[in-house]
Length: 272
Image (tube, rainbow, N blue to C red; front, side, top):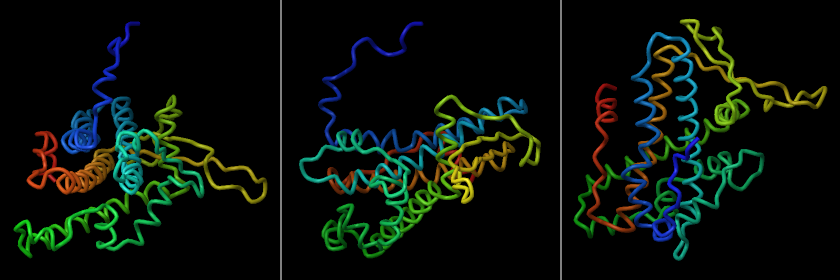
């Protein structure tokens, strides 16, 4: 089998990937990747049950990955100080969903849930009202800006909470998708009799035996259930894109405008 990768990695390019370039790339491309893929897959849905289950698996995996992106960026932005490269932080920080881990969704959620908007703006080092006014912003525009931040914060909190609910079944299910797919074609839990069962032993401890019970995640593969998964992925991706675009404008370019949406994503949002 021939390699799909070039024989020489672009070390020179990567070594020059400074904060400005990395963040600009994320704002223009990577922050929308999950949403674009999810919408593309959903629009390819057909009647074939194997295809439908396969797309259902990928949509769940994509949603779980979008949630992990949120947790990762939360810690990266908190630790991004003068002289610290974003590239190094993104490479170093690993999200681990074990109890008490410093970089877990639960840790991020508990901290973010205690923040108000002033805390969020301070921790992410976003412009103050005074700075915005000095830049010519109106009071009305500042209120809209704060509302955008508030909505993004609520979406991100919900995303972090989703990573920890139901004994982290979403996380363990995603791991099954990534590592060999212990996925069972099933018919239960679906209005059309097409679903996927993702079993895992990462369930709650049995008080009698001390063993972990088998936990399971169900993926109903009817249109509306999968559409909701796509909605959630687009919502989470949009919230992170909004936050990162504001941070980019704050740090590097006060005249920055959010990049135009890809056509497929713009059409999806219009249809919704």
